[in-house]
Image 1 (cartoon, rainbow, N blue to C red):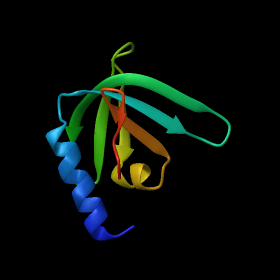
Image 2: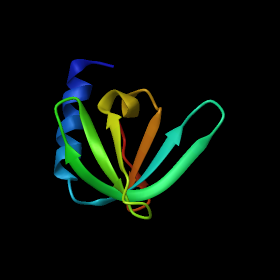
Image 3: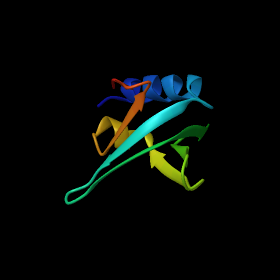
Image 4: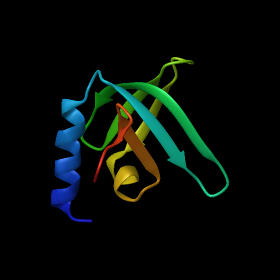
Length: 80
């Protein structure tokens, strides 16, 4: 993972603000999948607004790069 990868990912997510996404959190024992909206991007993190609960969940860009979180748009996985 390079700084360039991180910057590229940030730029890609900035273009998706306001779009519907599918989030998959990958933990050791449990996987959680839900639909939401990419609410806002910040320099070190981004927020997802869950559709069903209106809960805001915060993730770091590095979570995607390390495969702790997967983000899909229109059933298409966002590539790193």
